[in-house]
Length: 298
Image (cartoon, rainbow, N blue to C red):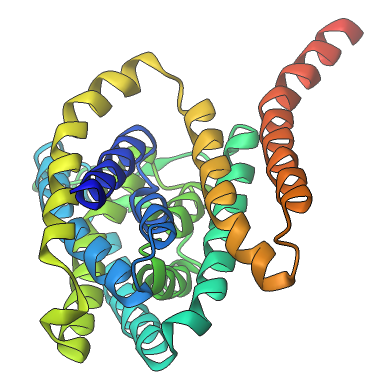
């Protein structure tokens, strides 16, 4: 019962983060589930199944509010699904105990990426929409270079640890995609990518490859978090939330990496934990200090 509560908490925290930032469901829930001792394949299958269910609701919402561009969704979904198959292949080919430190390293890299993303405002390019056509439809105008390759890489990380949004969304913003379209298209394409990953894992491992109770607990936690996230996003700026998520990913995966590297003694671990907290705090304070210095010099 205590474990199911932990899994529900993982779903709650992941959905809260995803609702506030438009990313982070997979890395947040994967980190918590891996720390709980669940096998990497079970973690990926459970997280991706939960993402399919929540993603369908998100996709319908984005469709209702016209946050979708069909061409961009296809451009993300197809290579992303191919990448998901590649990620699942790696996940099932290597023994879980051997793979755990590498997954912790990958989650740490995602944490660093989120930390950099929210350490300062993103300087996205100017957003454009085409003039309306005969049916009044407008399409996105953005720099398409590297989009398919990024979707492929995001599919690999999604197949292994459920990380899709943190890889793809920031890249689209830097390519000039309007934020509502970036989040809407990424969330919609994620349904196909997560479905490919989860069903591939189930086909490879059978129904024993995941625990239905874990998935249900995560979904219940996610459903409870949905209205809280709607309130949360109105009250709390996304930047401190993003930095907190980055710190959570770094902290929850630090012990696995430290043990792997031979630095698992208590003094080393306390030093690592305090260092991560100090870096996150410095990332939060730095823009304020820069702004203060600029104001003083003017």
